[in-house]
Length: 154
Ligand SMILES: C[S@@+](CC[C@H](N)C(=O)[O-])C[C@H]1O[C@@H](n2cnc3c(N)ncnc32)[C@H](O)[C@@H]1O
Image (cartoon, rainbow, N blue to C red; front, side, top):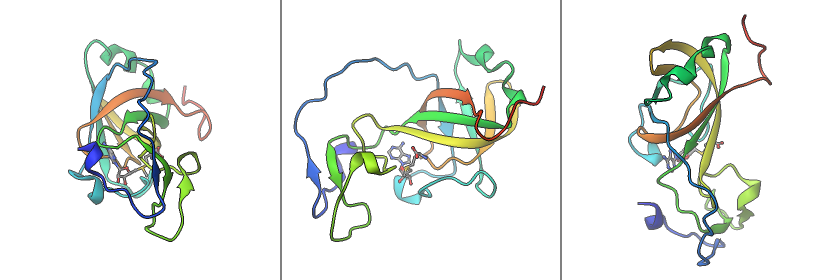
């Protein structure tokens, strides 16, 4: 589980409790080829990465209406296996540490993952994409059209 991740040399944690300001509602989950964190790539590749499936739950399936117009999507998900208390991190096991907010590490106070993916197809509540790198079963927070890479196909 999250807190069993080891603290490395130069890393700094906080034992201050997280103030809870918001309640997230998971809207589905993500199916990928990777069962463990250590098997995942660090960042997904939207051209060469494997197909992964975003599974949207009721009542949000109809909220996918129109998504096919966007070949590129931003996917937000909850990195549920992450510890949340690292202020300084030593991601490369090197001789120094960097601030959490200067890294895309999954370890952060609010472990939200963001990936810009390529839409391959949609079959009902199942959206197939390339470009993810999370563990299979990772909870889904949101899906948004990516306006930076492509304009919609209308
Ligand atoms: C570096 S993060 C990048 C996530 C996202 N692309 C981003 O930039 O916000 C990806 C890594 O998080 C880890 N990871 C994947 N799924 C996770 C999960 N459900 N909980 C915690 N860590 C996870 C894996 O080690 C993976 O290589």
